[in-house]
Length: 338
Ligand SMILES: C[S@@+](CC[C@H](N)C(=O)[O-])C[C@H]1O[C@@H](n2cnc3c(N)ncnc32)[C@H](O)[C@@H]1O
Image 1 (cartoon, protein in one colour):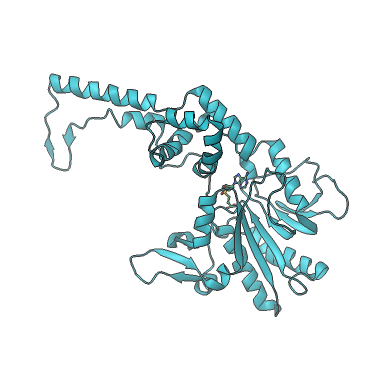
Image 2: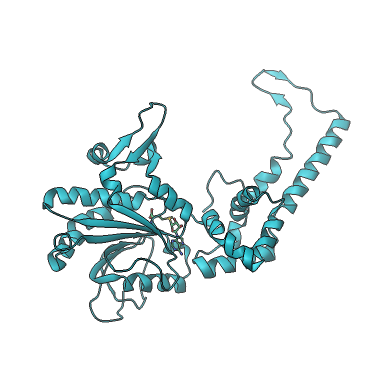
């Protein structure tokens, strides 16, 4: 996904060559450059364009990087993402005080330097788009079906805290939405205990999640009553941010994980896992690998929520479909058709 703010390769080159001749704001015509000036400008444009061209990833290097990234993280980087990748990696070039993407690529190719840089590379290239109450039907299903069912069958919530995970939680909107839903649920249940765990590979995203401060506009999808109960407004009127209230923050902890590594994550297991809008970036074999890992950590009878755009059809997983993009972990049987 290329966001509007990411300059395209064409845009980057064009910005070095456009020369304005008119000043519509003043309503007067500004004389165009003389032939001599035009030659200088055009020489500069060529230099700029050449620099932009030079500061790019060689196609072979891009293929190498894409293969490495997919193998380790799961995310596909098809050739159409070249400009996005270059644009994001230029920030790493600047942060490291390097001269060019070529230098950065050389750094990545040195194994001991790659080991140090890899977490930053991951943080630079992940796609973190998220929202509160994203795909809201899932939160109704959580409240009306998954929570009552898990409680009735296992006593979770009363005899022990009910455990719910947001796998690939990005900057925290999903786990905090869960915590708000759980808090509302607790109001109807008496002594109800639960915990939320937010998991993601991107440590920058997790830092934002822990801070729990968001642009006020991001809170629009949160129902008004919950906004009043669980969000704090900044004191200064010019500060258009909201912070998650302490009682909700206290319910949520965060931990870095890689869904593709065999031994990721916390000890113990979850009653309910959301893993949404991440598998869509993976090839099918990596989707299955990640889903098998999730199933291993989900209690029998527990619920798995994926995104509506992520189909599990035909995968050999111990899951049965119970609602749109909602699955239930089968009992003792190790495999089954989803
Ligand atoms: C588009 S966000 C989805 C956020 C949230 N689940 C939602 O639906 O709004 C995808 C997240 O997946 C994370 N991610 C990508 N690959 C991952 C991996 N291999 N292990 C863990 N998290 C990963 C990214 O860092 C990113 O924050």
